[in-house]
Length: 83
Image (cartoon, rainbow, N blue to C red; front, side, top):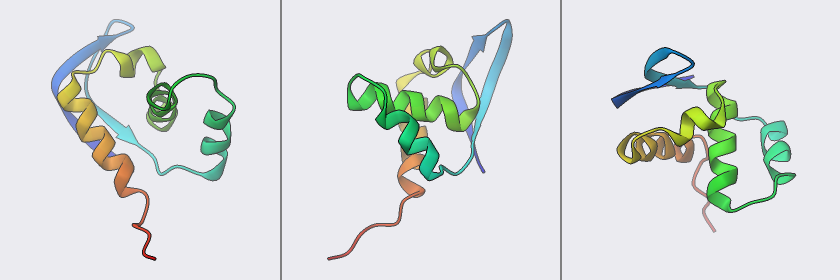
């Protein structure tokens, strides 16, 4: 689990959210987003929402600086591939 402190807290469902915790992805998470229509970014937002156990609308409200921090955590879940 990785917790990201938000620079810009958001409000969702009447609660202030100042941090998000992402669990490590599983293959089933990728299978779920593979079935979704939309852009790669829309799929990434859906994956992020799933890993954080929040609605995708919550992720959509994040400040871009906070979302970039989340993207860095997502990249850290995958080892670099060497050829």
